[in-house]
Image 1 (cartoon, rainbow, N blue to C red):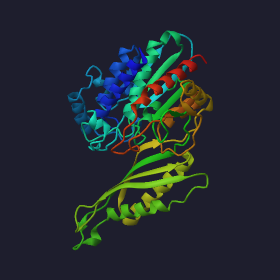
Image 2 (cartoon, rainbow, N blue to C red):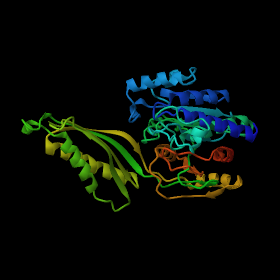
Image 3 (tube, rainbow, N blue to C red):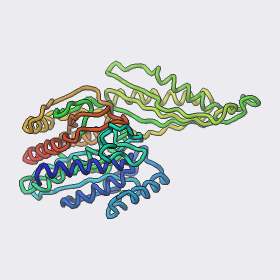
Image 4 (cartoon, rainbow, N blue to C red):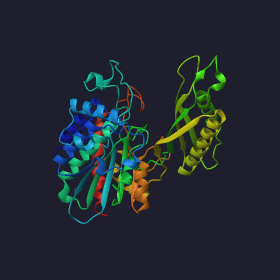
Length: 425
């Protein structure tokens, strides 16, 4: 396949996925279309519950929401030959190309999910101008549409050139990266248990166009917590003493989480992003719910912050005589990339004529690809997380987010060149 032909295909895929965004564990249309393309290239597919542990899917939508979205996917162009695999919201794919020749197993992880952000309708927004703005209230505001397309482009190159390759190649299409929810379920299902080298990647994140970071080590460990309080409602004027105030318990933790001590071994974060409570001006609130996250420079630090948060929640519940529930709905761990593998990505970058940085330690939020990297490293393999720089119309998670599509083909070529080097090791 000529490079210009492949470039056009990747852009077409990206624009299609951008127009029909799906949030975590609901990527049914996206996954079904990707599966059809991957199988057309001759890759062996495992999908849905074959590659995801149901016991480790954090923050998964309920059955009603899942069924509703399945109907939406059918109405909006899903590939019905594969849709049954994803109909329950287990939307992961592992596509394998086995050359039949001795060699290592090299894996690439890409993510597929969008965000619950309403996309810009500004006249200068390119997706609107060119007719691929989101058709619903969600948006690919972080580039995962590009990541899925890069994975499909890589599949095309691997399949086309398999005679010159050796070993095994696994392409992991992960759901629910946003909220750090999907990777662990795939790790627990054993999808990387045979992997020697794993490369995860992202587009943008402030890295300039035509620049590549081969090893991004700045990810913070994180825990996403849904907290709820259940008290007793009562008339605020007539019988206030009979009430058990869930709102006050929630307000207490919203304030006191900020009092968690800093940690001597590194940075930490804690945030209450949402708080909902109460049903009327004259009613003692019996329900309250909060969305909380903790972060730490290392998993040890994050665990410390999370444990402190749990103590504050239980203490607030005891203080106001209410019951509480605390659910873990997302988690990411810290990790350090393998320099040996990063060097191969860096060499592939330089050979492609792009500017490469071997390593970056700048804080880059959190990412659950760390579960994949850690699992591979624990079994003696190598893992890294690379960044493909691009021009951005606006920052990540912004309604005007858009990328320079000229970034897509070079990203595919760098990953393919790294694969061709690694398979001979």
